Image 1 (cartoon, one colour):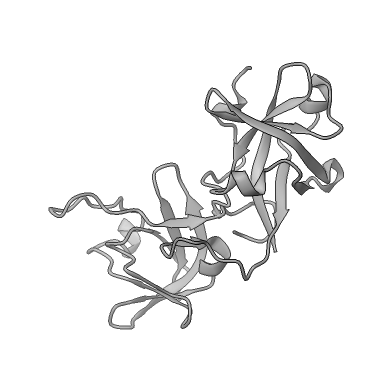
Image 2: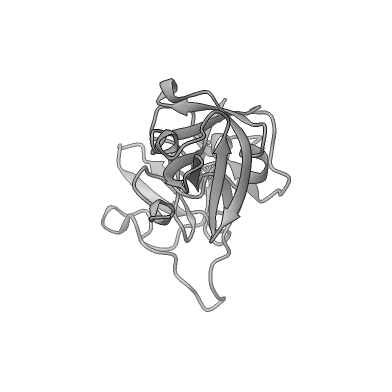
Length: 221
């Protein structure tokens, strides 16, 4: 299974290093020295990671065979794609890979079908389930314990307790309500989805960041 784990940003310095927008919760594994990654576009790869370090909050990678700034700039906006074993699961029982979640039936505690989990959307503040209802409408459900108390992989379903209005058409994207019990506790989907046609997994987050727009990591070095 293919998983997008990063996007190359601007060149850093003059020796071929690149900044990387990380799209994985496990960069120490997915983007480690020696890792061989496929790319989108395919013509840019495969790429082998030679070295990596964090500088001013950004991940900098050295890629084998890329020794100049112009060579690094030529890779800008390239997606980095890892091949993973779909049977490998996160160690934390409250963490899930996107491919484990996409396709689950979303039901209420009384068994009422809400729809199918079509995508896991990774935002900086939290993860959201994009649920496609039987009539074709889509609703966004925050992936937090108060609203999604159970993920039942054996029976391929996610059980939700939606607050009033959450799945109504006019209120389909309500924010999480911080009730009297305090802020909602986030749960985590790992391995962020990609928009390039490869298999979802984020985040998936292997990445916490979705979309292919610019980021802070693209700031001038």
